[in-house]
Amino acid sequence: MRKFKLLFILPLFLLLDGCKVNYNFTGTGKIDADTFQVNYFQNTSELIEPGIDRTFTLALQDIIQNQTNLTLTNSGGDLLYEGEIVDYRISPMTATADQRAAQNRLTITVMVRFSNKRKETDNFEKRFSFFYDFPAETQLTGATLNTALDEIFTRITQDIFNESLAKW
Image (tube, one colour):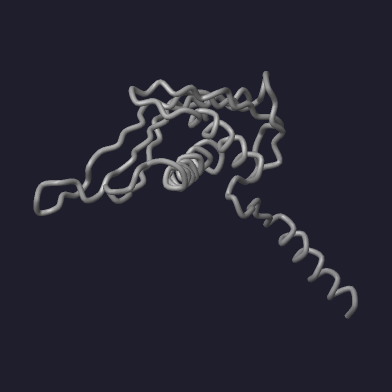
């Protein structure tokens, strides 16, 4: 009877051992790379807000470091992110009864070129954009600007991460 149990259980373990799922909470699965490089994203938009190029570059580096085991490098990375901030625009969204703006929208668009040295079919060049709405009577400075940039850059960097590594 003991041999019968062993003959039944052993194939069951071997069958279940082959059913492995490669999953983690970021959805990246197995990344065929060891290092990544994020080149400086220069602000080439018509309207220039000082410092957002550096803030965006650091935000992109942070999300990749926080959600993967990849090592950041200054040159020769297996994965390369480069591009520029191509649009920084403030536009009125809603109007009051006397034709004055009641709400404004800050929109930022980033052009990204992604290269994977180990899997060139993953390479892409794509625009990523997001916005932040704020009351028209509020100046886009200080805490309001910081909140807007945090929200926009969080969304854009997550979209870039998903497109390049998570494949969502």
